[in-house]
Image 1 (cartoon, rainbow, N blue to C red):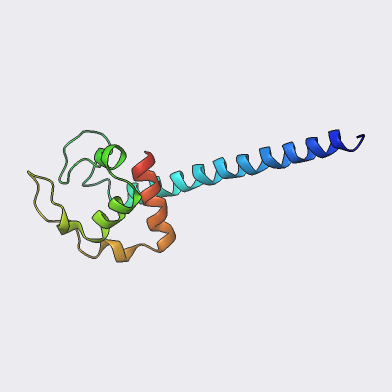
Image 2 (cartoon, rainbow, N blue to C red):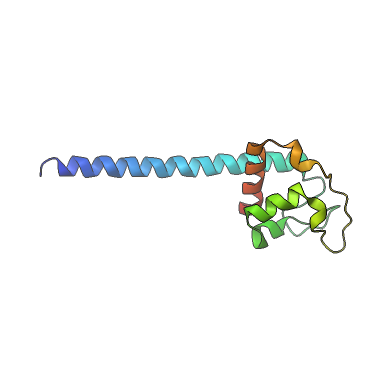
Length: 111
């Protein structure tokens, strides 16, 4: 019985540490995605409801999951928002590494 309190304390500490690492990982992923967005997307797209050359990407947060958002980037001509033309680079999905794409998708869907 005397070992149970230290054992419970140890498991509680490990559980808290894992959660903190997970939150930090999401924060870092979001920040990486923001940098990628700012460098590659921001000149044409807004994350608010502002109309620029391209449509607002606010809809990624509202209506799309990660799979749909990724598909929209890889095949931009597949779903053209009414009122916009098909001018997004067709090769944009191949310009990013897999980890960069993951970070961008995380940012877009959790912005």
